[in-house]
Length: 321
Ligand SMILES: [Cu+2]
Image 1 (cartoon, rainbow, N blue to C red):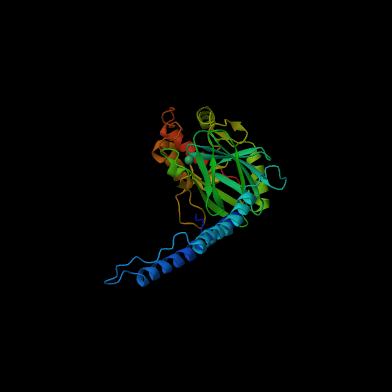
Image 2: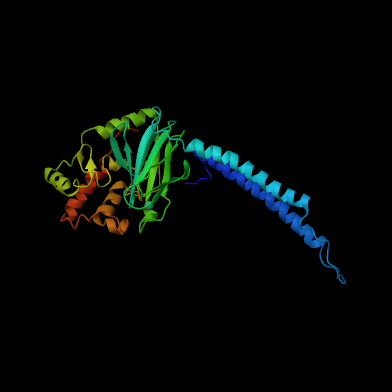
């Protein structure tokens, strides 16, 4: 998660701009300090010196020089900056070759809708490598900021209803960490998400898997509890509501609730997905204070039922990679 290690063309262009401005600043710094040091030593007041040194105010030549040089530097900075900003801010939402994603920020999670495929997911943004992803961003509550440092700069989600648009792409397969970059409440620091870039084939399989009918708990009693208590807000497959994060395939995601990292094959980081799921379901407020999910216990679910739902969700994986 670093803008200094770009993993895509947008982040690369942005890093190049940073390098250009830092290079110019360093050159200016060195020249200014060198002149200052030279002047301090060479023109210092000597013992017995009483006369006023020659004054240079109103010197036409000097004023032209110290106006022209900064102006030139600002132009050198401005031309590529403006070019890059307009290139990456281009609205690609009508581009047929781009994958359109509508981002909705919530306290404290991220919702991703793919209008071309009629699917909605949360927390893990799955994208095909090499394709331009055309984003359209809005918020469901307060001001948030969508930021995947290794792929692109920040983009605000505005409470006044205006849609912000931009695009980026990821040439390489991988998982890139994203953060909310605007203080938005108690659990702002936990408002993480992941961008997962996969091959076009895997992406197509993922789309199909997302559209498949919902998988519910095998135990019919538990399935009933899950439907009445969880699916009033959450959705799985074709069932449930649009209020809370879509749970389709949640067991295969990078994290639970965006912040409890699931251990992946060949990785030491994170805990088993079932442990994370139980930790979350037994006390969501302890994991992410101030989130709007009611505690399953307060809904009247027993510890056993909560464990059963955790087990069902931890095993609900989509086979697409
Ligand atoms: Cu936020």
